[in-house]
Length: 273
Image 1 (cartoon, rainbow, N blue to C red):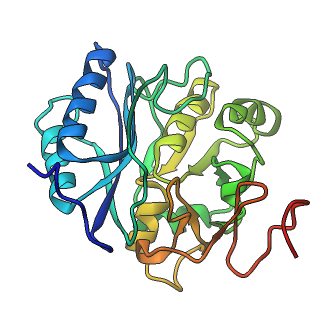
Image 2: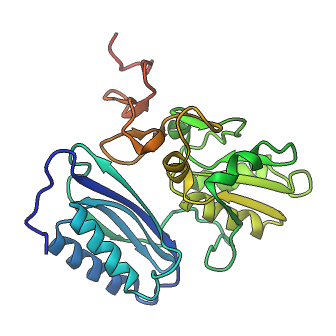
Image 3: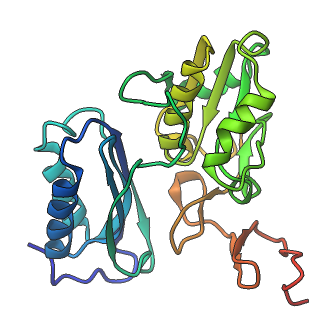
C-alpha cells in the first residue's frame, strides 16, 4: 500500500486512461474507485458513466502500477484500455476527484455511441502517411485554445470553445458525399473516438482516428520528424507536452486563464506589457 508515500520531485507518474464500455452500475463503480484512490494516494480526476471510464491521475510509480493492475483485473477494462504514462516534475493535481457523469466525454449528440460503432484506429507509425493523402480530410477535434499550441500539418480547426460545439460544426462544414474519408485526432484519443461514432451515425463511410491521440504520437515519433508542429496542451499543471512526452515551454496567462505558446505573449486586454 502506498497511501502515505509522497513522490519526491520528478517522481510523479501521470496516467491518462479511458475506455468506452458498458458500466451497469456507474454510481457503485464511482464509489469503489474513490475509496481505492483515497487509500492509495491518487490525485487527479476520474470520470465514470454508463458508457465507461475516463481520467488523468497521478501518484507514485507504485500507486499507478497498482491502479493499472486493479483495472486489468476487471473484465470490463482488461482489454483495449487506453493507458498512457508520462512524468511530472511537480505535483500535477491538487487532489483526487471521482465524478459520476452522463458521458465520460460530453458531446450530447444522438447516435454518437462508441460502444456501438467507432471509426478505424490508425497507429502513430501509420498516421503521417494517411493524413498526407489528397483524398483524406484531416480534422482537429480539440478546442481553439488547445489548437493554438500545436497541430498536425493541414488540419482543419473547427474553432470550437467546447466539444459540445463539434456536432454543429460537422453539420455546417462536412458532407459525407463530398468528404467520404475523414481523419480526426485529439489529445489522448477519447474525443476523436467519440467523434468518429458521430460521423458514422451521420452517413460518413470511411472515418479514421489516431489511436492513443497526440500523446501516443509524441511518445513514439522522434522530434524533428513527422507532421506534428508545436506542443500538446494537457489538462494539468504542466500545461503542455512535446516529443518524448517531456514538459513543454508553454505558459499560462493569468489574466485570461488560457495557455500561451512558447516565446509568445497572450495579447489579451488583461495581459501586462
